Length: 133
Image 1: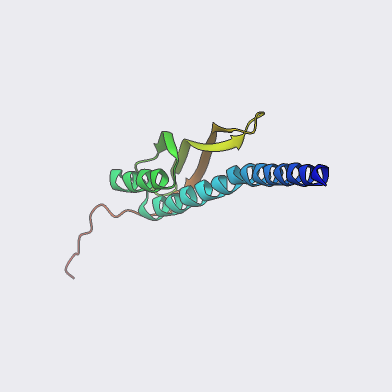
Image 2: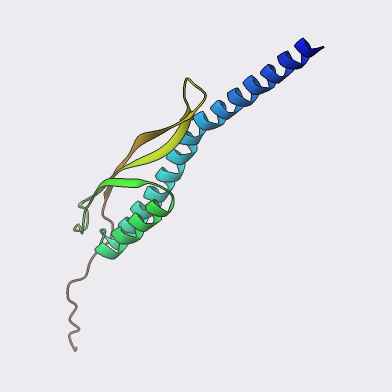
């Protein structure tokens, strides 16, 4: 009777540990998807504005930090002429936990990188003069 109870408890503990490990293995995948979605959104905003100014950069940093990312490096084109290249590269770390060999949680950092190149489609008008006819 007691042996069946011990086997059931051990099986339950192993099942819970395996389930937790599977959930923790899926977490980096979902974090990567979220990181890519945020960076893609700001790449589109950068494309619409013809470059990334300081306010847009600060917004992006704040949004990534609010999602738990630790930003290492951001490289973005400030402005580009019509038909020029717009580049965005973001490197960040994401801390998460995994189950170690002694069934304890260990903190691990995952490095993620987003890089995109676009052609500037914003035609910037420097000056317009209306001539009377």
